[in-house]
Image 1 (cartoon, rainbow, N blue to C red):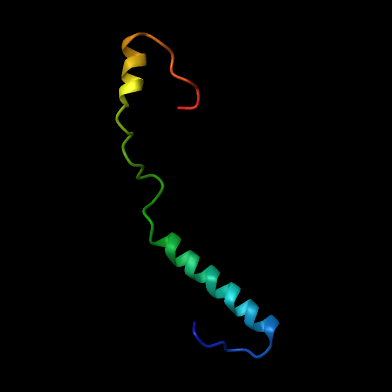
Image 2 (spheres, rainbow, N blue to C red):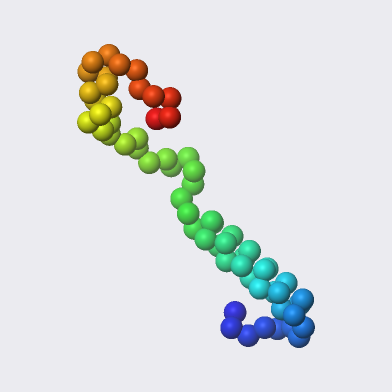
Length: 61
């Protein structure tokens, strides 16, 4: 990736863009599948307080 195969700014730019796309595809393919979701986070003290007192949680959670 240090040396450009082509002469000319447009061709060099195209090679850089295609190289970046290839690197991104490699990174995405090495990530775990989306089905393997992490376990839900434990409730915070404030959420526990709301649940204990029967108050509704805000919709943004």
